Image 1 (tube, rainbow, N blue to C red):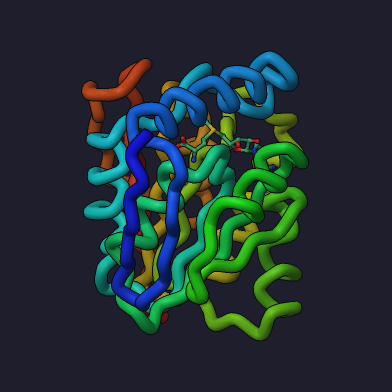
Image 2: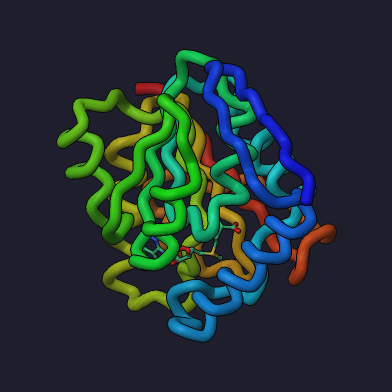
Length: 212
Ligand SMILES: C[S@@+](CC[C@H](N)C(=O)[O-])C[C@H]1O[C@@H](n2cnc3c(N)ncnc32)[C@H](O)[C@@H]1O
């Protein structure tokens, strides 16, 4: 199999020992296993497409951000796309609830800009404070607001609104529109786009926190 050396902007080096196509297949299989373990929590049977990853990078303005937070990184495809787009001095905190996904991410992403927490996105505030991280410029979420208990969804929404830097962006990609009902009381009306080059097609909601 191909051995490929990949260098990122911050000089980090990952040496995958399998071909990209095999790695993608393996991620898809791990993702499907995650869905079978806990369908309501994972909310999708395959990882996000490359086109969706790029739409998220643009919507969240990842390349301008100094502090990025990802809620629900799963097998890490979106996470790697964000790291590729980020400045060398930026930081990314990812929060994952599933222990197997967390274990895989911990073992596979070696980048000095990346930190990872195991737990619920409801604890966003606490995780940022524990690491002395600044207010995020961008928060991106793939967690399924439509299948989570309403109390959890509301606690995630209020945390996001509280910690986001004024002028910062919250981007959520979802099949259904429930996230809007939870988030809009805190951040107002979102910009909405469809990404049809994804299985299934998803809505991408973007909120910008008002300045002051
Ligand atoms: C639809 S998957 C998205 C995975 C990946 N970001 C992608 O786009 O391919 C949703 C992810 O959110 C995680 N998740 C669900 N509820 C969560 C919560 N309350 N806190 C943190 N992660 C959560 C799931 O375990 C899963 O990894």
